[in-house]
Image 1 (cartoon, rainbow, N blue to C red):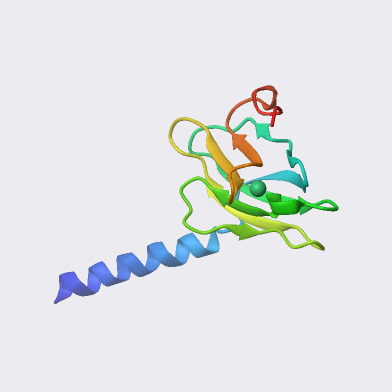
Image 2: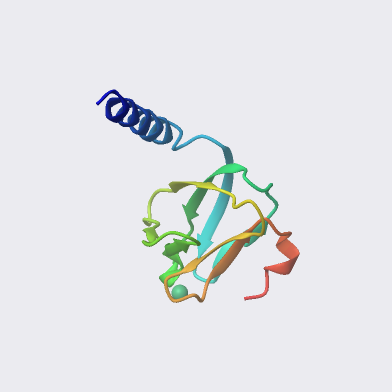
Length: 118
Ligand SMILES: [Cu+2]
């Protein structure tokens, strides 16, 4: 019984901590336009916590529905205000994101030069 209670307490504290940290991390601003994300590539460290700030800019087409690698659902950037998405960089390799049709693409963890072509 004692073990069960302890386990419950541990799970709860982890869950609560994660929620509080939701908007913690280096802020990275990404402008969303009809032809993609600017910048479409940026540097980040493995395991680094980031807050991606997607800012709308004029006509965004389908680029405003964004799926971040590892997520099961898309986030939608509204026309009139930015949205913030907290992410943690994977232990190795870049973290990609793309519109739901995989046309507009971006990648974090690699230099922008590799990702401007679209
Ligand atoms: Cu698209």
